[in-house]
Structure formats: C-alpha cells, structure tokens
Length: 230
Image 1 (cartoon, rainbow, N blue to C red):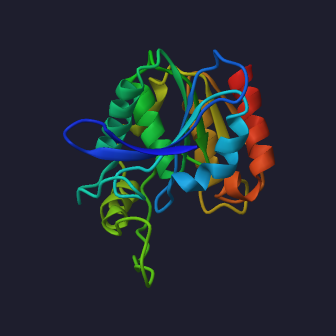
Image 2: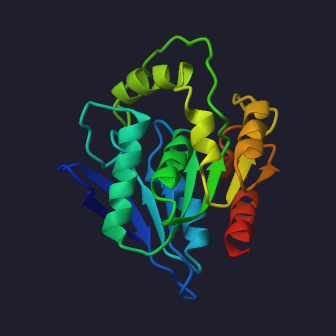
C-alpha cells in the first residue's frame, strides 16, 4: 500500500491510499470516497479485501486527512477534485464507491463523467431533502479534518439544491444503493427514493446503521464485490 498526494487541478492536492491488485488483471480500479470527518483510512478493511483482484484508490476529500485544506468546501468542488483525480489516473473506466457525503460527491462525479464511471455504489445515501438544522458543536481536541467542512457543507445538506432529483435521473451508471436499515439516522425512505429514481439501480439493506462498511465490513464487501463482478 502506498500513500500519494496528487495535484488534481488548480494546485489542489488530494491524498490517496493505493493498493495494487494482488490477483487478476483487467478489472477496473475502484475509487473509494469517505463521509464527512472520515479519511481514506476508514476504507482500509474494504480496500484490502477488494485489492485481492482490483487496484483500489481510497481518497481523502478536500479538507480531510492528508489532502489540502483550502478553507472553501462544498459538494460541487469536491466532485471537481475527484474528477481531476480520475484524469490523473488516466483509466478508461473506474468503479466509484461513496459513503454519506462521499456518496453525494460520487453521484456528482458520475453525472459529470458518465463515460468514465462504469459502476457506482452509494452507501446509506438518500435523495437530499430539506431538514431542520441540528446544532453544530465542534468536538474537543485535534480532528483529522477541517471543522469548516462541517460548517460549510452541513447547510448545503440541510437545505439542498432542488436539482438533486434531476441529477439522479441522469446517472447512467448501474448503481448499487446500500441502506443502513432502521438504526441509521438517514431516513431509509429517502434511500429507497434514491434507488427508485435512478435509471438502473438495485437496493440492498444491511441493518448496520449509517456506518455499514465499518460495522459489517464482510457483508458490505460481499455485496459490493457481487455487484462489481456481475
């Protein structure tokens, strides 16, 4: 496993953890995007499993981990960053996996690069709906990310762009939607709505709460592998 920082455009650098495929060649690489406050390390178990037969790139979104902290945070520029990373990779196609905020970013990337994203996996993500903002309280101590990410992105999630349903309808990549079940704080009816709105989607529910890949890594990875290999 190697850790690299990549210029993805405009002088902004993203950090990624790369695991080369240990087995068969020819499978598209997998790009893994974590949620708010999480880093590429959050994918270590899943990435190590998938790297048995495909190269994995676990990414720190801007403001997180070893990536740059420009002080300006929004879903759209985060998607632009990841699209820039895909340009650097130079692969004809990739499979894209995103959790929570990373899932919303992944949807935008798939909309921007329909010819590059072969298959899409979104973990416990629903169609964004307006919601009552919750109080923000910064945790005490050092954080592995810039707290300004929460301050700037949370309002965007609380009062989302009304164009999200149209964007979802335009996604061409076959998509696996993984719901966390009734113990997740994400309304599962919104997760089902995402699956129903996508042109080509299948829904799998793993009753593990919001952190499906961390709580049930084997079940999550088995579902992802079956989907990517289908």
